[in-house]
Image (tube, helix red, strand yellow):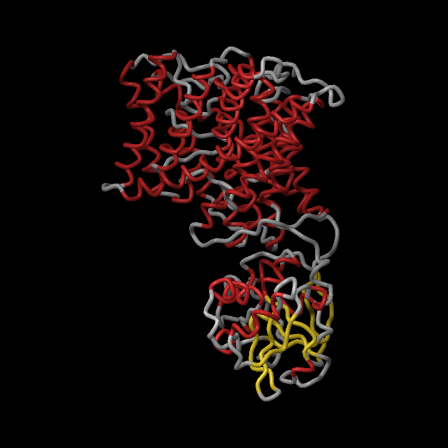
Length: 640
């Protein structure tokens, strides 16, 4: 039942952590007089609009992220040349295949040496540096108040550069995202910024890292919006745009104005001349990429579990995993002439785009071996990103599917490069959940407007099918496995400000509490959808049976079960004029899952006063609120 409202206090708390907001989180906030309990007190109120101070900080984050990308690439080159060739050099063109190492068969030990060094750094200094990095940033945003330890950036830089440089089958984008986000977090903590500003600076660092790495400033902005930002407004978007622009400028100073790949002119026809068969082919490609994305996501965490169950220390398990990667590298070099799956794999992608690698069975083999290599690398405990492997597998499978399509349908007007490019976008979108980012980044790389329509079709299908097969992305699954639920959507306050009665799309019936389940079976069949039941005994409401529970019990049988045995007697009573925000708040406070709406000040136990039933499932379906909103309040118990 309802509880008496608690007294108003001026202390602000985090509902998930139970900790009061520190005074440093109130920095830069203005004071406004308000009446509380009859007294005039000052309440902290954030000045509206874009913060000049935050914008300047964002500029600094973008510059640091840009130079961080430059330095990180140099570290990768240094370790790669040292471990593969025994020389000290910062020159390493990832678009060219690594030459055969002078160590010969001994090259299989190179990833093992790297693994030992990575294990030492991670285990000794920063466990957060293990893995692909982005989930840790998301966790910091949603569960740590935007706080990341400064040590993470340094250790992540070293560990990831060693992993990649020694042949680990991982990417450099995730580490750069984590490095940029860490600097944004540290700067926000040093400047004693309120939480929303710290979170914005984290997003600035992440978006700037993507922008500097791929020379895709718009893609960097969208990545921050789709994956990192918890608020989309002028005050958060402007700093992100400033940061990504600054990082892109720094990146272009050192890497030039070209995109990450030298992409040939597309052979796609204009939208008006492309046949429906071609669009259908892109649709099929999108579906198959979704299945590969699910396999990719599942495989990484499956291998994590497998390695965790192996005997021995983290050092031994990681070294064993990287030894297997070294064997794959060696076999590929001996049989096909290149190491192929080692490092970021951009040279293989470039070969496909140039048409130099077009043999179908080799492309399919590389899909499988890359999936195995990245799973061994990350599963055994390496440090590196998942973005580049997604591009690699998207390009190889996309190219292979195009070649198979040409064999089956000789007149199919889809080029090898076109299939690879759209395959890359589909894999990135489906695995990371950043669908719009994938479309825009590929467009920025190709600068060919004809690619837009095929991209939208294929990426949309790949993303939708992956969501149907697996709700979590490769980023959020890691957190879900820890019990950390991350919102998958954003919405305005529109639904929250509506009347709770507007959520009442499910009808209700008043029935005798002592009746058996079978007694209402006939009545329920005449209702569409299945109604909620308000149980009445001696003209008093004694409980509610929600439509979802009723539907499941009717399917399962048990017709002799009294309805009162199915009833939820712990329900919330609200006035029928309550708004959705009031309903959600009261459900969370009382940890109940159903609300009974009654006329004004009428007796809440009077069956005639009931005007509607709203269950938590109704709220989820119609207000599009986070699924775990109720569970997180219940888990908090009585902490507030």
